[in-house]
Length: 291
Image (cartoon, rainbow, N blue to C red; front, side):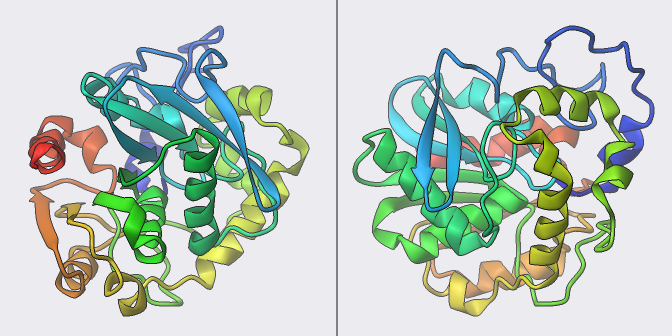
């Protein structure tokens, strides 16, 4: 999740605002969504799935047709997707994944989207979930969902990609500083990172992981070779003022994807669901429920 809105709001949070073990997401404010469960650190419903050189943490909520939920990158967490989980678990089995290097998942050495797609498949296998699943992802999670749809079309029922569009190599997303160190990022929300240090399996490696992930983003591209392989119905959701996935890049991805729909949320930025969840949910709910 790489965006100025939450970076600025995070600076306003006092170190005592979220005392104790209350789960929090990056940039959380008292006025924002408050997680209803220990999303991302819920040992009672959490499990590990081995995938290549990493162990991927996932949590399962609810019952029904399965939906994989994927958070944003760098400062992302399962907790930030909590409002989606709250809604989806009423009628779906929700598989919320902490992508490699985030939360309770180990990092491994490969941070690419094809590998993250493999990680999703590893989780489905570990959870004994057969057949097709829908996927809902934000930012980094959106690209992971799209990559899964391209690599494993027979397993993807529907895809919701929020804040993800065409990504040409060399494009620096919005406010992301390609040379930022973890120490510089940490200062934007020290409370979040202090809590993460308690649950991360390898906290001493966080700075190295952050550097590797930044380098991976600098060399990433998600273009026609991905979008044209997707056969599942796909909903692209984007804030009108998104600087990380600018509207024109999402329009381009929408046009390259065979069975795509588009929802543009007026006056919203990259964290569109944090700014206007009702509008996003109004687009997502009927899309997922349509038979």
